[in-house]
Image 1 (cartoon, rainbow, N blue to C red):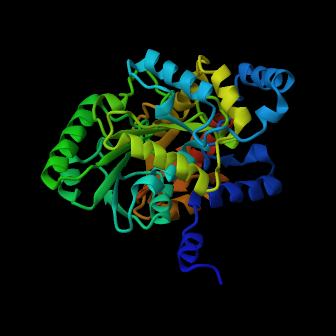
Image 2: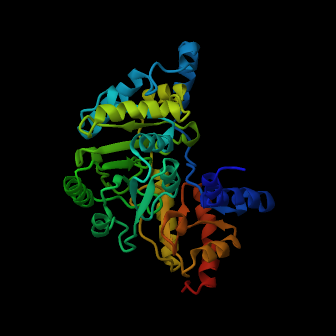
Length: 398
């Protein structure tokens, strides 16, 4: 018999993955070109050529015993961490060193490492709905308690009044994700400043440390010149989790990093705890080859024109059909209001047209659906007539 905790996790396993698997089933029945699978945030853009060249050169030139062996530190290669720190310092005016960087098995691995390092049983972790549903599982892994802030469906910026009211002496961490999955919204500088002020006030009131965990796999994917605030500059107790899954189209390679600044409370202990957590969670160290690849490709620019074209085509197409949605500023998701209260019913109706979308309840925001537009442009173009039929079914089409 599996554990009770895992029984619950299996029962509530990811709707995103389930929909993705359904897409594979439908593709076998109807042909992949006739299935419009918008379920998974799996980049359709190939990794830059520089990534391929870096891998080839590393395999040809590096000592294989070193390249494929354990790193001396669980935090990763020191030269890689130093290069990452220097790159961030140039870009954001920060002052990180190699010791502030822990290389991780993607952003998900990084979040698990930092939550393992921080949480005692019963500690609270605040999230802003809509949020990436795995945050609940990550928090539960370490017997923490997830506290949701309800969504502001007008702007999808955090509700700061409710946030302030729900901070308690048990609040240990706050997770933010901007650009946001699933809405594509970028939290404004004004929002971040006010959020930081609330947390500073509550730290003083309760005499506790509250850590802001910034989950940043979509940082490089922002459109129309929108600036994504770098959170360590606004609040001392900030930890950043980053992934190259989206920026370099390497989701399956599982490579990212944590930043724990010197300004964070008990930073030395927290850095040490993160390194130990990396080992005892079974990661041991981040993939060594990919660490070296990251170092070689730090100056690679993300070409977001592909995603931007998809964004424009899908957003304008659905708006013209009568669907309600907020224009995404970043990431590669469109969050659409369901024409009926039960968005799962709407997802089921969409499947009749071989359109696969994810219910908003998976993100703590029922009544909406998420559409991942990191697909071939032809998929979006060819799906619009099907969306038109779906709109007509619900009386949306003019």
